[in-house]
Amino acid sequence: MSNLQGMTLLDLFRLQCDGKASPEEVLQELWAVTERLDPVLRAYISRWQEIPAVTQSEPVLPIALKDNLCTRDYPTTCGSKMLMDFRPQYDATAVKKLRNAGAVFPGKTNMDEFGMGSSTENSGFFVTKNPYDITRVPGGSSGGSAVAVATGMVPAALGTDTGGSVRQPASFCALVGIRPTYGLVSRYGLVAFASSLDTIGVLARTVEDTALILSLISGKDPKDSTSRQGFTARIPEDLAISTPFTLGLVKELCEGEEVEEEVKQSLDSAVRTFENLGYKIQEVSVPHIRYALDSYYVIAPAEASSNLARYDGVKYGYREMGGGRGKKKEGEQVTLEEMYAFTRSKGFGDEVKRRILLGVFVLCSGYYEAYYQKALTLRKRIADELLEALQSCDALLTPTSPTPPFRLGERLDSPLKMYYSDMDTLPAALAGIPAISIPSGFTRSGLPIGIQFMGKPFDELTLFRISYAFQEATGLKNLMVKG
Image 1: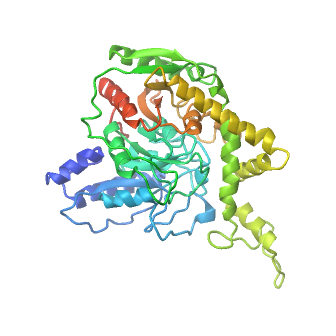
Image 2: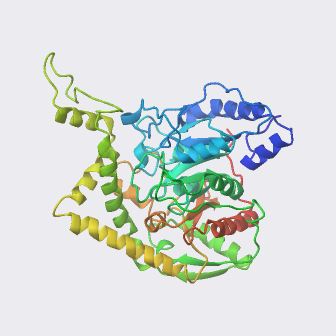
Image 3: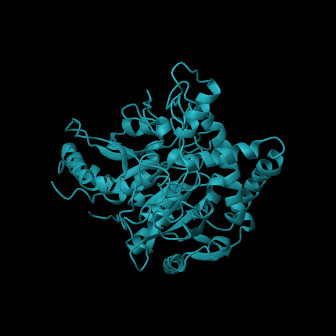
């Protein structure tokens, strides 16, 4: 059997069930694709070096994992020198659920260090390149997962989304990417960045594959007190609902100089497609949504500064005893405080250190009320306004990113400009509501563009139905770069 590279996860499963391809043949071809493409694109931090033995009678589901999900058979580095030798003794709940469903994991994918970034240029190891144009970024922080799926190294992957880290790479790599409602998927075994914002999401080339994997990993988990109900659906039957929905076009995110012209044109084209399908499109206003960036970049660094305090070189992870000025002289003792400082200075990258410092600052006495408390108040107001807007429509429609993929290195010297690339994805994260990005077209130079739908809490099914209708109407599905 050949040409398995472009198969969806559901297609591969059916082929194996029908006896038209063996599990070994599936893994062999995907492994060969990875061997050919990954040395250039660098999607994986760690991966198979040979095909493992598999049971011929049991179908396999090849799924890549972002490297901040704990796995007992791979290191979990979070893209950081700080954890480069860390090997968990357990699987994250989402990983365990997939393993129980027959999934195999070809590797752990590259990411911005501890999920802090929008381009996968902040990895502590190497840069991942966009397969549509290797001079451009694949998005972040789940850039490695996106590239692995977009090139057919695997049909699907798990990513994580704190402020947009599944949806923005999905947009930049012409994929479907969903951030579920906060609490739909257990966070047990996900290495924490910002605990009130972190979610585990899915990247795939079709809506059907995305919905299938979400149904496998969701549900209440006694190991995560924030986890709640699961998601179930018959696929594709429950997705193919023809009743038109009402979409709210969020005025504040669809205009302004930050939104590039070709992104606006792609959004306009999507609106026309939905109107032709009989959908009702109405403009809605979410006045405080323009301040989502301000709120997020106070709250997320504050939580990160607390979560990352555990990386001190004492119990596990990287330890540095000499510091940047070289080793201590023979016999000279290193104090505990010096070891902390040396370890954290050399173990963390610049972006992580920037956010830790910002987080410590906003939590300091005298600044807590001025910044952190105000950010929490603003977060609540944004969430309330989004939920109010969703009372009059079934989902909110926006661009996923204000720009197509930008060039490697273009924004590294301007953190604020880099942060602005998340302006469309942050509101859903702050509100804890589900949001999905799907391909909506390409620029004249062939760069992917995505659109985003935000929905009511635990109403992922409506988002999948809207996305499925658009996918079928436009034919923008199972898009892949062959190398």
